[in-house]
Length: 203
Image (cartoon, rainbow, N blue to C red; front, side, top):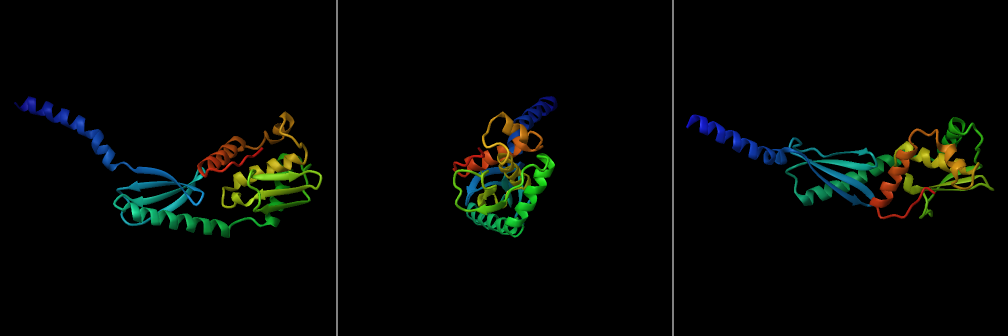
């Protein structure tokens, strides 16, 4: 009987182990709050505190597993607002954008693209950025505010390249080939646009 009991205990353990794992692993939920893609992670190890940070194009909010759904919703909205306020304090001004554009031009375009003006705009609903080569003006959508600097840099560089190549042909993309996070930045923007139900393009 001892041997049979040992075998039964082994079988029971093998059957219940996956179930045990599902109770202790983190629960992850994805949602969109005020146009921000949010990943909510519940953890049994977290007792009281709530924290948030940016990761790969989304805001990750960490909450205790025992928190109610109503409390979770309130905290997610609170953390979205807090992070947005913090990022807004660190936003680049129009002057900062212009200086960054000149630095990117020197680094990736041999300094050949020199914009007459670079500024944020709030009336751009179909593109992340735009350029008027005849005027040398570049405009970035204020929807980029708070996004990682390497994403904003990509949009700036994209519009700088338009000062040299108006279209999106092979010569245009060749100008951007040296930007190390080119595809990552484009994927980031596509993901944000899709998650928020926007129809924004980088072309």
